Image (cartoon, rainbow, N blue to C red; front, side):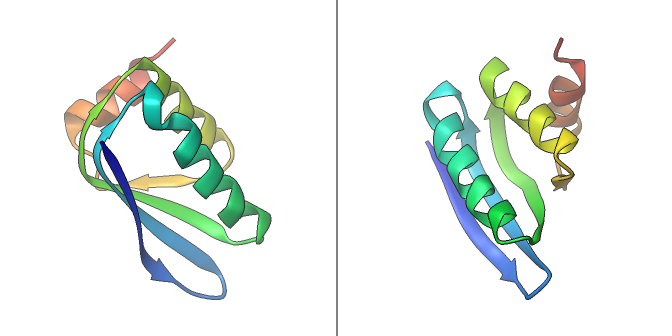
Length: 87
């Protein structure tokens, strides 16, 4: 299960918190939430402090989002290593 919560919002940007597991089942839901925020012209930050597991599809999405200038914060070393180690 993946929970996506808005934890901070301003005129300039949005910070979303991810909790649980980012697996192929939840990739499209997160992509929609991200696209909505980016289409508003806001900067976006993902707080990964409570993200416990990321599968290959989730890692690929997080790498794609990094390329789209979406920042990741508070990711565990395990999660960061998997995001950076994909491909």
